[in-house]
Length: 334
Ligand code: ADE
Ligand code: ZN
Image 1 (cartoon, rainbow, N blue to C red):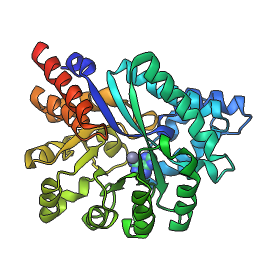
Image 2 (image 1 turned 45 degrees about the vertical axis):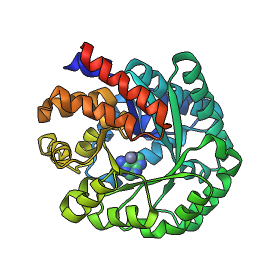
Image 3 (image 1 turned 135 degrees about the vertical axis):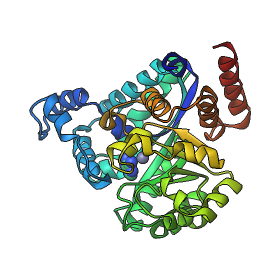
Image 4 (image 1 turned 90 degrees about the vertical axis):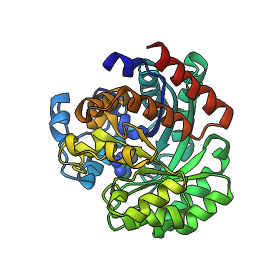
């Protein structure tokens, strides 16, 4: 099954580019940019990556991002991730980036997006890997701040497919961002958001009814509300589920208790994703392998998850169908 999963064609729909910063690259960039980081060795970094909750992780994640200064740094970061995609048979990636994490440190929006874009173009040319960019607003900051970011994005609108909402969920409900999501939709951005990772089912309701998102990042806590589950199914809204992230951030205490199988059994459209792979111990294939082994998922479940990753991507319909057929052909021949 490991080999089957590794070579299976798939898409990744929930990946924070800042969360793909490996300790080795963090050290190299700290040296290149003469930035102090609070670690003396890779071992010390790995020791620090023990999280008790989302906030615990976010503090370390934002501190790690401080080594990203120049366009070349964002290029190196994105190229490293897309190289992984090539190794893992990820044919399409929908990549989140957090502009405010950088603009708040004095890094220009264009420095960030130009570096990322250069790597995206190169991966498309070299390997035929397509990608979309999702600009995520940080929900611990104000809606006014998100509006500033939306404004900054305008010269690069043609490079950005969607807006998202991430960072500290508890205490920062989707309702805080209704206006900026409405404005984003008017500009033509697709709408996505993290909801129900640590926050309650109520936040998922707000995300689907108030923000009007087309896909939910995480969404685990929707399972506490049967009416919500029915709505998610009826409206054909997919969840981007992140098993190893959920384990590392204590959303689940044990992978054996992960709700993925329950979601599939209820008819929820789920996909598998890595979230912040440099921090959570595995890229996309490892997420597939760990959850398949732990929950004893069948080959049919794994194939369905890969098909969902294309079906619920933001690709245009013909391309979706083509990639879903590729998964079916692979399943027939392997
Ligand atoms: N930013 C990066 N990873 C995140 C996660 N899992 N939840 C919320 N914000 C994030
Ligand atoms: Zn995430």
